[in-house]
Length: 195
Ligand code: NI
Image (cartoon, rainbow, N blue to C red; front, side, top):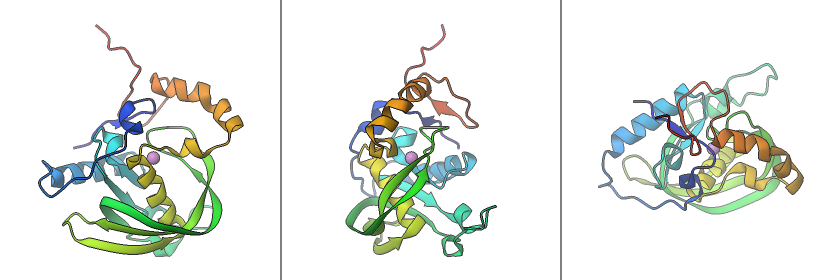
């Protein structure tokens, strides 16, 4: 089942999410729903707070970045880079910071260059609660860093400079009020329900 994606301005996106254990209700279904929601919205990552759940869980599938687009800059190593990360911990971020134009399904229509370290060492549980520790680099690291921020209550726009932030304020207010065209179902925090 596709879930509505929570839009910028909803307090759930600003909460530090909680760890879960194997007894978390409907976990399998939640994960399946999150993948379905992410694919329908053409995203490469989706964190649980973005569907209204304040838990430390996110799903990623970087396959779209594996295909060569018009720039010819696809990364074939990302083919099949599909993962469920539960209770992840970033152990280390290393390497030079590099810029990449990020977007977010909760902040439609805004893309801005964000600087992040190139490598990340992460520990996490998969959907079967098996523990993994992996070193990621490039776009794989980037997606994990972006989604990890979500479960910490952070958004990519937090990393922009003050001038950029000021320029985006009107657009962000509009998003929270539902004044944005978007090709998937969203839940807007500041839309008054019609009587
Ligand atoms: Ni996001």
